[in-house]
Image 1 (cartoon, each protein chain N blue to C red):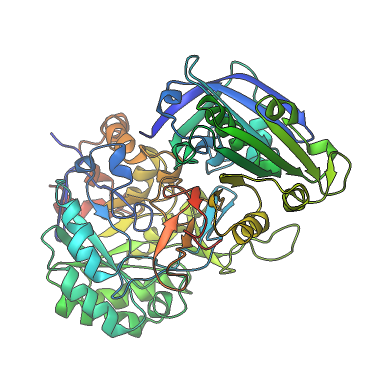
Image 2: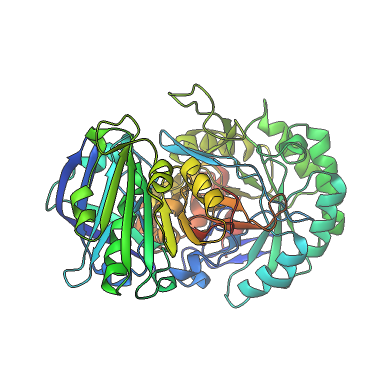
Length: 313
Length: 259
């Protein structure tokens, strides 16, 4: 029996492990290390209508048990992603979750409409939480009504289910989550990075050229766990959890909080084999903990599993 | 091919103030090609520090499956690395990047190798490979001060070597660019690695020569997936064309990218 198989809106996953958007490019680099078909899904780098260069460097800085990034949504633009990146990925038996980003509503709608037509795109991840761009991104993700409206408009044009990526840089993430659920979101992905800064001891100035960046890595896991624990008790749609996952144990913790699948981001930089390693280790860990199937773990921290047995494939 | 391998420390010693020479043993040595590639090191198990450190390869010994790096002990990662002793392990990802094109120099050419501070190490393997194919090498090595000078003897064994220190405590007083202009050194091809102002000065001084520069940039993944280390291309300096220092570089022809 495949203890890891899960069914989510749009996503028939052989396992609930996928690389997080921004941490895996469009798959080419990590394909050197293992067969991408081993993954449950791939969350590709954000796509915008036009190509973007992104922010000036330095774009990354290490912090305690984490790192800051201010890449700035660099990507080749919708046309190239449709013409080259997505077709290249179709050689692998793995569903693609396309991260959709933009500065204006029309941009999000245009990307969503087109990219959802690609045969290997099984879901969209609506990026309303990137903290590293001046307009768009997080601006859409901090006000519930704005988030709801954008979700609704993207849902209208998308041919595949829409998951909305939530920012932790808000006063009450439950409000945003409920708003996007009302807007028609099929699921949520959370959390995006936490806004942070690091200063240089010699110059007194920020290390990042963008001054601020998004904090990721193990340091943010407690924040992600708390937020998923809260949000999952207030929405009925599934959650793909992320934020500092480095091990099979971390995956189970995210499921207990309320996740039905997870994404691994920063950990790929440390160990390029981390995703297949976690996939291999999960079945034994589940046995050791007494579970027949990973879906039994969803929401166990507050009793959700009794209601959500239907996510088990 | 890029490999991930736990390599064994053969030897480590401090060769100048805070400058360490570390030799590792590993099968991935057989994957190494042009000098100027780098490896991405996990200096300790666990999450402190979290990320790998990109360190240039300074010499390669394929027969023994060993390679050497010279680095400066500065922050948390390099401090932990400098504590490693013979027999201990280092998790290595590499070799990464494209090195100096040895093939662009032909037998009988004079190659000028210009290094600044901790940019000097990759020039050592470059020099050895150039000498092996009959290229004359001239080295100009610039350091801050006498205490941080290293490998002047090793470079001297391969070719004429000029050492400059900013404060004049060893060798010539001044910058490497002062040495080149003072001594009117003639050359067919120039390879360089060091601080960006030095690379910019060299790029500007020799617009008609074959010049190859090794860049550095803060990195995340080291393999081209995260877009941390990009630079604009020379022919599209304000547009969205880019090159990645980790995979397209770290070595670029002068003018190929914006420094």
